[in-house]
Length: 270
Image (cartoon, rainbow, N blue to C red; front, side, top):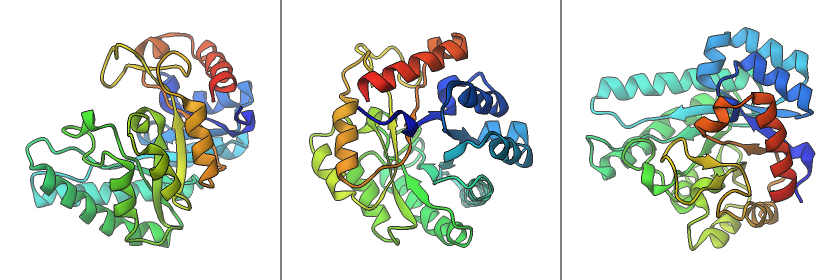
């Protein structure tokens, strides 16, 4: 069983809450860490968000998201990189463990070109992040998202890209929703030792009700979150475990009730 003290609330699990409400919810429920999303940070204002986190004594496990590098024009690609610089600034101000990168999709581009743009974008971002003490976490997404969200689809791909950089600066974010299916998952997690910057849990429902908003609470689907958590720990990761559930039904429920369920399922299935 995972230590309850490692639980981190990924803000998208209670997406209808503002940053302040999510931080306050963590305090009420005894959750010591939170993963903040940039649109919520920007709604609150970065300085206000930093103060709220400090006042609450809540640790920021990650800021999400950077990335989204592929684009049709050089101007759009440059704009994306500049936005990633701002994301690094936000992660630094919040003393987050890492800035999570979702690479971006290939719609309107060849997948080869899109992957090259991702590599170029990371290369542009790393020196800027280094100067601010921000670690970059590459998150591979399930292949069903390759067209619109991420052309980085396997742990192996993420590790290959990360290998060009110091292991203290660029690593991987392992989300069970995205990696559980990979027949090489055990070997790849072991290979990721030293580069695991974050670990996320949820569940894969059968049938999947929605490609984006159909994740389930742990225990409601087919993912063995505990087995994967043990693998990640054996590879040396002992940091926060984010519960990240994109699910409209959960969002429409009372957020405090949802958090109570999250804690119960975390203790039982992670």
